[in-house]
Length: 360
Image (cartoon, rainbow, N blue to C red; front, side, top):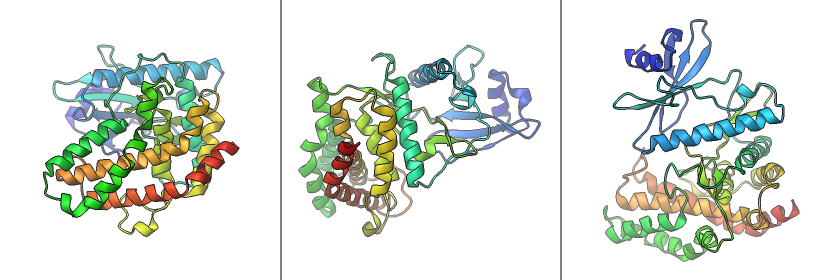
């Protein structure tokens, strides 16, 4: 074991409980390690927070503290059994904070939830369970007053901001790639005004910000041995936002029959069985606090987040691949085309999706 890790665990009072510390999971942002105890059981998760992405670690960790405490209180009030398996528990360091700064890196420790598992592949049944889980997650946090939580990544799902970045990339043409993607630039601009509805409705006082997860993928939910939902995890991006974004991001990732970077666009379309299952599960939990306007705009959220990701991939391609890691030539262009094909499929399914939401 690296002495560095033991030094960090010591700050949480755990250095004498670690037999082994090994890499864990497949996250792309933070460095995550599993701490195995002397009895061979996995006890803790040790993470090095990527402070290049999350530049305000105190805000990040305060959000997590507020959210986990709020969920724990709600679970206890309704008499839920086994609460420690249904909400993440972060340990306090020697200074009382739920993270530790060693002068160079930020670290945190949470309890490993025993007898839990996650899934990477989605099915209609898992989609329904995920919808219920994320809907309940938002419902439990819906009474947190505005202003208590702050944005960990400002303008993360702000379409007007993403379009400003895109237009700057087009104007600069830093990598000299603009001439080869002019058709895609035109497609983006043709939809730009209609894809900024969230921000306009917010300014008009018709759409409020709620507490969102902002990374609603099925692998951010833990299940028990019987396949029942335990809790939502990966709370770094929990912050104020629009529910349309959370709903839409699950459909963008979970209801895509192809991959995010599929080189064959013909494999990419929206899986309506996944959409219907997720929408049914989500509204079963979230209907109690959503406004009629929010409910009616849920299918729009799926188009919005897919459009947003198309714009972000194309922006990075024009800038010379400076943000997303690429693993092959023109990787961001491949991603852009795959996301745009999914957007076309979502546009074609608009009436069917809106009709299903009305039926619920």
